[in-house]
Image 1 (cartoon, helix red, strand yellow):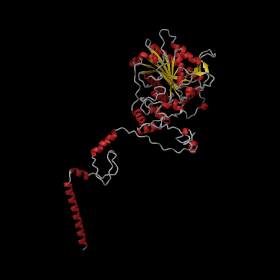
Image 2 (cartoon, one colour):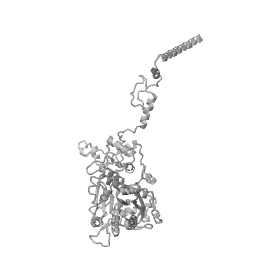
Image 3 (cartoon, helix red, strand yellow):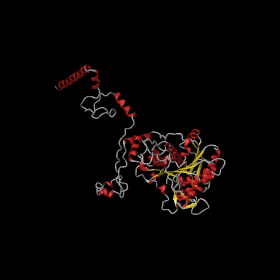
Image 4 (cartoon, helix red, strand yellow):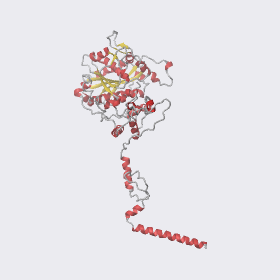
Length: 541
């Protein structure tokens, strides 16, 4: 009886399955082709496909999904080719402040008590304005600066007015609003100083190589200029052995260090565009301990044997670095005069100009070099001496009123000072000093608060950083005018070396774009920054 019941059950199951299969076969045979494709589609989900964001979400028990594989692949290709969307920056989670530390939103801690007592609601003037807000247009602009190579200002011909661009007339009518051709010339000189920083930090302890006639290999950002001689500055001070740390590198305390170079424009097309052949003397800022020690020697000393009250005087430390010879290298003064005289003789009969460029300490050394060069070249009565101009970035006061008068009136040197309003180095020595320091030349004033990229409360180091100077210069249009909308200088270096002073929205946008900032040590050692260009190390001053 059991076997009979089992067999009956098996026959019933077989019959049911057969009927189901026959019914399914008939149904597939009679339905249209479109329904057949829908019947074989995979099960639907309640969320839309990430490869087809335009498709509407359908319930799992609803109509089957009729999107073909071809459509999925087309949407995938579109996602892979389409650039990243402009996402609004996400707020970073606030870190728990330690004992005695200010919160991220209140770095100074000045309004902490007001916020704790909830008084900021009743005292609106105590609230700090947001500094990290950025519009979608600014984010798109940031993406372009990080993904495209920097485009300099248009190279217009200045041959007809090259003396005016070189400072004749004190750059009147060119600084405010800033002429685009002058902006490009100043940016190029600033990049030359960046190359000097790169050359020093790539091989800082190579001063002895100059005694064997070895010229340091330099790669300039503008290949129309060719470096002809390396320059070294020597300090009259030496760091005593007891003050030297074993862990510190030896170059940090060496007396003589690479400080710059002399270059000449040897591209004939560029010579024709500029209207003359330009000789550039490029000088970097403070980098070693002896140079720092010389910066602190602010007493004025006369440039000549005459030591009366009306004699031209300069800071003792600057003059020491300029006139002191090293153990294996000549003094900076002798090297500059010798090389410039050689180049002037080499290109005798051509229209020449001499431009001395410097940042920070190099700005003061540039004034001393220009003063001496104008005197030495004027003694040659065979031909008219080339005009001498100085372009300085973040330079301190160098000498007294008598020195400035001799430099500009007697020697005819044109001086252009590029100054950041937040840079304290440009205000030292302080006005309360009894020595009577004064600035020389025309001033081009910038302000970090005008930048859409930098924080309004940028630190002192950022305000003195040369790359920050060049960033502000590229965007400066004129007093009271907004930052240039078509400023095209890349901000990759600024992100690498001044990241804490860059607005958070820019940093987050750079992370979304996949930009990885290299450390200053790595970028300098490799000779290139994260953006693929020549790397540099910001001036420690």
